Each structure stands twice: as C-alpha cells, then as structure tokens.
Amino acid sequence: MALSKITNDGVTGLSIASNGRVTMANSVFMTRFYLASNHTTDAVVTGWTGSNHSVEIMNIGTAVTHSSGNFTFPITGIWRLVLQGRINSPGNDTTTAVYINITTDNSTYTRMMYAGVGDVDSGTLGFFIQNYINVDNVTNVKAQIEVASIANGSSLMGQSNGPISPTQVVFERITDSQ
Image (tube, rainbow, N blue to C red; front, side, top):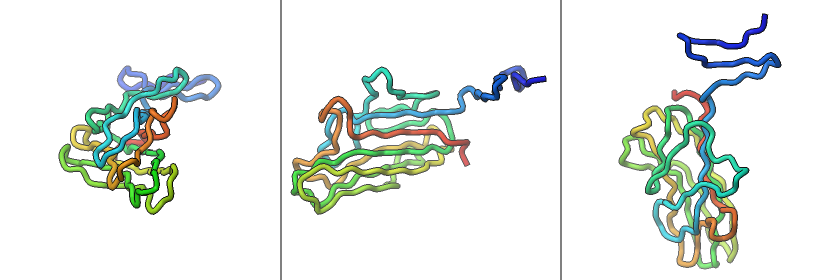
C-alpha cells in the first residue's frame, strides 16, 4: 500500500506522490532583490527592488523584507546570503569595498563579509560574496549591504545601466537554526 500523506495532529506536513515525488509545504524560502539604480556613496545600500521580468522567480515561500537598507528574515533558520555585482570605476578609485553587515541585537551592525576592488584602471569589475547566517531570532538578526571607500565617479552598478541590474542579493533558507 502506498503512503500518500503524513500528518501530525491533523495537519498535513508532507505529501508523497505515487511516483515518489515528495512535497513539503513551506520548506523552501528564497528571496531575491536587485539594485534599482547605481549606488555612488559610502553608505548602507537602500535602493533594492524586485524584478520586472514576469518569468523570474523573486520569492519562494515567505519573503525576506527590505526597509531602509535593513533586510528582515521571515522565520528562523540557517540562511545563505549571496551578493554578486559589478563596480564601475573611472580609474581614480584606489579601493571600493562592499560589505555584508549583520546585527544580532537589532541595532549594532558588524561587517561580516567583504569584497573589494582596488588599484584598477578604468573599467567594470565583478564581485561575489557568500555567507551563512544563523537567524535564531527574527526580531534581532538582520542584514545590510554597505559600500565604503568609493571614489567620485565610481558606482555599485544598478538597473540604471540597462534592463537587468548587474547587482543582486539572494537570501535562501537552508535548514533550521542552530
């Protein structure tokens, strides 16, 4: 006899189809944000937006939210943060830094991960940062993206450079918090 549903106190938590495919409601969470326009100052980046392309998946499950540069997680868990982007430099920028900042007290942010570009001729350079965050309290644990040491004329490139933003951040829940 094939098992079709596993229940816990009358609530369905897992389905197994006759072909063996397993479905677990609310088990995957992913949110993606794009940088809407170029960011040109030393500051926390606030200009994040969703995609305007109908075929792109921006959220799976309950979404991470963004307000004034702060990203808030919808549930506890181990979350993977992936930040990838491009920095445009006119050639006079000796160092541009991009940080993932984390707070565990909803107040004081600490720089956790870093990508930097330095001593570059004019041009555009890509970067990639990945980190895993233990979100054990959704009120206190939050994330930010910060740009520092950016010279006049340089930018963290956003959607103003074309229809697709070259800078994006993705939040993906991996498992329960530790």
